[in-house]
Length: 114
Length: 113
Image (cartoon, rainbow over all chains, first blue to last red; front, top):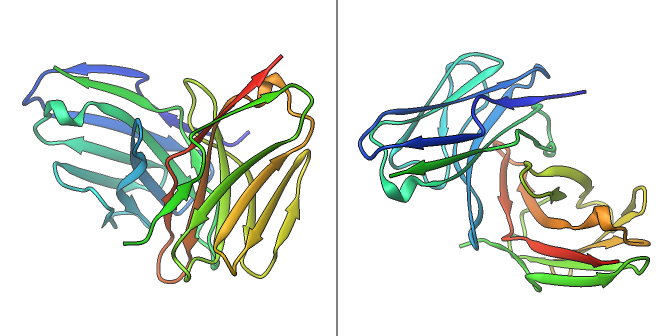
């Protein structure tokens, strides 16, 4: 069965801490994505990557950075966590293809910044 | 800006009845549409998709209808079961350039036993 694995299910951090969220996929997908999910706002794209060492800003990149050193791994970094970054973070991956491809999601990381 | 929206935030359906979840989209350049199901505590899971060259696609107990004239998408679930209780998201994809998916805010489906 295909799998997207996020390293932590729940995470509690303090304001100002540097936070790393890790995501690994075993499907050899080219594309990987980080979304945050907030009540009433749906899923919003933070960053995505379509190849190793490549990254593109999504709709809400401020306060975040990403790293993709290997094809299977995509990390989201909060340089200095703030309370407004308390959210559910979802990683996803997809194949590259013309015409769009479906996303495979991890189970999410619920991050609380105190 | 472009957006994907849902008509009803919560839908309650009797077990065994059919469910219809609606979605409006506004980006006329979107050419690929997906429905996802998100159960409590899990990430969204793909249900069914449809490309803009089709107006209907059927899966197992689910059907997606696409009306490009009015930019409307619907998900029909036949013989709704308690396991169908979840939040359902429609998503649109403009496949030109890179794969950027825009999600709606979701509809919660509650199945009454």
